[in-house]
Image (cartoon, rainbow, N blue to C red; front, side, top):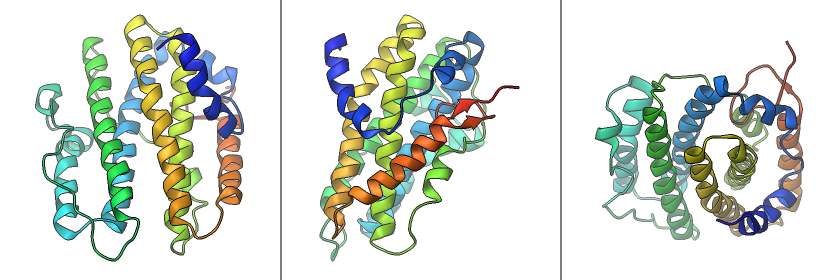
Length: 257
């Protein structure tokens, strides 16, 4: 992707997000000693992004057999991430699902939700494998690390009645994908050539993911979602720009020791 293409792709992302990643985060993230935590957290974020999409369609959109198929699809990744069972070799080619995922009757948005989320899941699981490849090539062993405050902080603002719960979760998904896209672009020039190319290659899918989440949110909502989008934009900006003692891929401004 050329610099001009990257710039054009990032323009709507920057307009959507209410703040840029602080320079202090970039300065911390580009330190060679922090590459391990960046890659480990990125790996787990890819899995969590796929899981979030899977949980949405299991709850709202698919029939019973398809719900079971989705759980089975994630099993080797979850076994690796949570129980350290498996390897790069055993995960090879597992991001493609062969069985059809069928909509349940009675939910008018089911098929569109399924189509967009299944594509997103395939891409996130493939990215998980690609990050693991990079870690393996650099002799960075996998270890489980706790999540940052970011997603939890966003989800704490989700309303508890339907369909607003689903709409809010989709808006949160849009912000997580948009911020990931912005951070990959910010960090890429400071990393070695292989990781820089990989991070630039992720921009297009992350940008599409955020747009898909937003489109689904508006499609499902009976009302205009602008107010909720603005609300979550402020929550997200506060998490990104405020001091944060726990350095991760989506953490806030590194707190001074």
